[in-house]
Length: 614
Image (cartoon, one colour):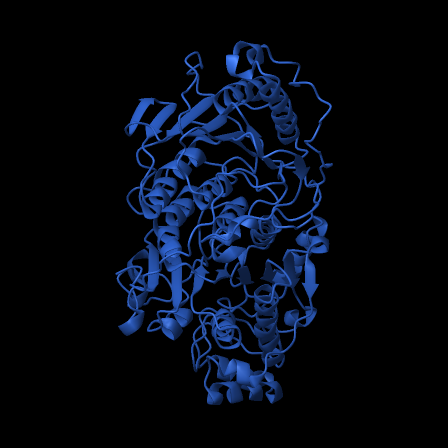
């Protein structure tokens, strides 16, 4: 199994023993509701369930002072009045006789998950824990948090596993000041937090929660705060924050592990955050993080106090970790321009009604049909109009492509890769067949010498994105051309600042990505682009590669993680590359077995250890 789930029922033992309106929202039902929803969706059963342990006091000491650990140990013997008096010494905290045990389990569960991921037992996972941790400081409980689960896990990964670069992404609606204080002078940990701030008028009311707090000393530039100065931020705002702020910095940092302080009080319906991001948004955010650190992503529960919103959001994160398609995002895809992090570069599309239901129990489909003489999908007449498809090899390849396309559109497989000796003609036929079969809106990403068909209707059903065009231009509202960026950094900027915003705004049912003659992309760039395009289309991506020597088909789970709805045989073997996470980020994909000639073995990336943000 590729995804771990860590949980223990003892973490529900601690509860508030007196009246306190501020603290009553942190209750055991937060865990039981989330676990029940995972079970109902069949997600818990598909995860490797790790048994948590109590963290040792030496492990707690990686972050916390011995005196503080001793104080917490003593709470086990206190009566209710003594617990209440001690709790009153801290901000928004309550203690229970079981708090020390629960908090040690929460840390231990997080460490178990990190060990399993870094030792290769699983690819990723979720620690479903309480009490939360990101507000806790070296010698102080704070904001329901007792021990800083994620901070201890980061130190543990450094000391036990020798990691040198760890990314912590905190999407809780409150600023995780505890994590920031612990790592503010440490350049080996990049900490990113968005949080409700309202110019310092929202808890924890700290000046250092603002955007100009970027770390200290050697750690200057390795703290990135994104304060929200109004409520109501939605899916578009969260995506814009990732695409325009987090991911550009994260790619430069090149982390070896991603830890997520996964607080869901930033989701719709939560009384603390008052935000509008829907649960599926957190699945999309998780997908974006999986292209980092070889896919080694460990999510750890922090806040989240609306039980329905919390449990649905947890399920979306687990679905993304398992490699399932995530339902498309709802609502307008234009971020708040005044209070958000910027718009989509001036692009916006009006989408019609969308289907947000995806089956997790689809039968497998095998694309190989060596006895198939040619195209299926009712033998599209467009296939007869291309001279490039007149030869038997091209026409047979087209048949395999259309068979795979039908499997994707019918939900039998999520995505696929195919080769063809005639990419332009095959792309034209695949596009027309998609529009006539099931797809209402298709995004075509054409890389190389691939011209848009001259008779393609400009009716809003197709968005044609031409990469490697002569110049950047919007040739029509639905035909965008741009030159191929010459450097890796410029390519990433192009994908994050233009391609993905266009794709998410268009909301396609399917992405057709074609790599034609003189396409110029390196293998890691092509794989990264394909992996990132899964999100906007609910995982439905078909990549066409102009190459005749890559013969034979097999259906395999890219990353090796078998799940319902995929046919898994063996892991497709890619050459090493700067972002090996791409091997694990496209599960359920059907592809050919031999790597094509366009897949080089690039040299190791050159890293510069300069601050990521100043």
